[in-house]
Length: 163
Ligand code: SME
Image (cartoon, rainbow, N blue to C red; front, side):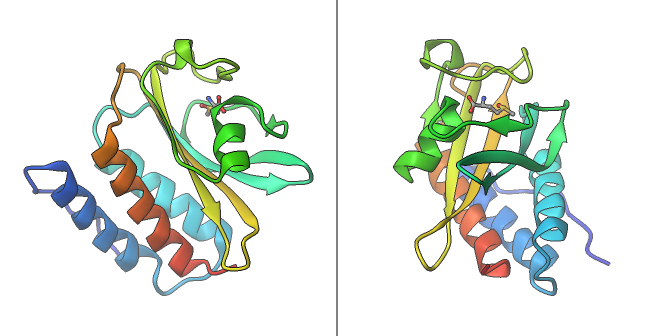
């Protein structure tokens, strides 16, 4: 049985490197997408400080549909190109939003969210699996080190779920 151990690194890059190792340990024996997405969301939610929601939106039809997450119940469907998630899906680039109130078209799910990061999940054939979304109740919770760290965590997730 996998057991998450507290992260001990003093800086963000070290913390994300430890967490990426834990993602590998948690997911490497399983390829089921829902199982791995659920465990990934739970691991990250409990490991990282100052996060009120994190989870997946998967590509579905022309938009996105919510997948496994931790936090309060969320919007079920996001139309093509809408919100921070839609921007990440459409641009295939990670969106770091220091103040969600300043992001035109931001979609409110949990009114406590003040900042957000969304990482696109792109399959080997170039198609979009979905996005990984994390929200914080603090302004500017996510910086460039979080972007690099979250992208590395998502790469470990995609490695375990090659599609
Ligand atoms: N804020 C997101 C919607 C999803 S929730 O944060 C869970 C957006 O603007 O796309």
